[in-house]
Length: 76
Image (cartoon, rainbow, N blue to C red; front, side, top):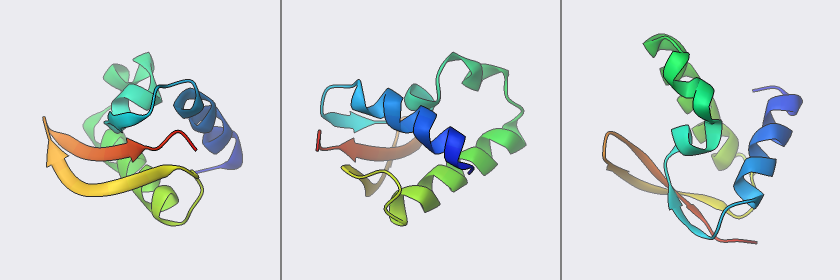
């Protein structure tokens, strides 16, 4: 995940109310146009970036629900 994409996603996250979310909600409306392999790759890149601390205030809950991994935005 390049720095420009990290900044774009951070800006989308910061604009949300604190709470749980799925990555496609953050990615945006272009998510539906991606091929399944691209969705898997980008989802994995986001998970790795969250775990690396690239998204302060976002935590991996370790749960899946509704077809995807659940993240928590603490608002910090």
